[in-house]
Length: 267
Image (tube, rainbow, N blue to C red; front, top):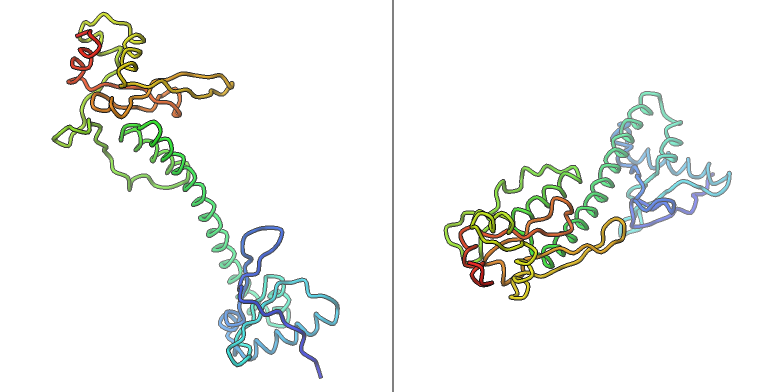
């Protein structure tokens, strides 16, 4: 008469392998019964017999878990791939084939969940960086939209769910439409104002409309760039620089530029 082996009872249906941090796939005795069309009690019996045979040869290396009800009766076993394959050697080729197909389905779903989890963590990290960038440099809504589209594309997501249009306008603007902007260089030339753009930017910085920021380039060198301040957002916006998405490029609202130039005595 066989004595039953000591079974591992754990609430974690999917035991963890130490070599990888994802939860391992298991197949329950109920699933095996369903796939093989055998009575569950017979599958439980077969598993117990298999475990007895394996224990005679030494420690059982496979992942094995037992579920019990409140009265202490076994309600299900959970086997990893190796133990399930071992159990299947007792059954016919048709039954083995059905279980193998079920295992492939389980493993595909587990791999998909792991990919989603990894991508989700990456997306959360990229959005957190974007939020920090937004707080510090106050990029225009259109630039924020481009960042979100880039994050979506980098992670295999469809960016079509994002709005197709962002309104870039001064905080006090009415009408709900974007206000056209240009660089200081273009607007100074357009209005016939003889003033070097670099000098114009420094004058705006003295008035608190611009702030000079710094970043490190790929060579470790310090690079200066301008950022429109909270005060300056009434007259312009921050675009992300085409040369580097980590810096901003000030653009000014065309219909408010004369007023802005007047403040530095150049209108």
